[in-house]
Length: 144
Image (tube, rainbow, N blue to C red):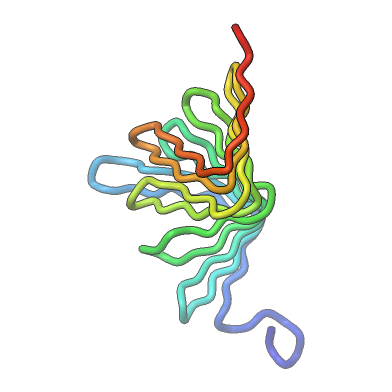
C-alpha cells in the first residue's frame, strides 16, 4: 500500500486470473485464481482461490504464493485429486512444478475408492503417480 492508502506502484493486482505454462514439449500446466498480486521487484505472486491442473492432477487451495523457478506454497483447504481419483487433503503443501512433486509437511488424509489413510506428512510424485504417507499412519480399507 502506498502512503495514500492505494495500491503500491511496485505491485500489480489482477482479478479473474487465468494462466498457462508452456515448455518445449507443449503445455505443462494451467490454472486460475480469483485474485492475484505480483510484486514487481521480487516477482513474488500471491493468489487466492487457486485451481491448477497438471496433466491429470488437479490442485486447489485458498491461497498460493511463489516466484518463477521456485516451488509454490499452497495454503488453506489444500486438495489434490490425481488421475486415479484419489483425493489428498491438508492445510499446507508445497508444489514443485519442475520436479513434479507435492510435499505436505503436516497432517494429511488420502482417500480412494475403497480406502482412507491419514498420516503425519506426505510426499507425492506426479509423474510416477506415487504417494508416500509418513507415520504415524492410520488406514481403513473397505472391500469392493
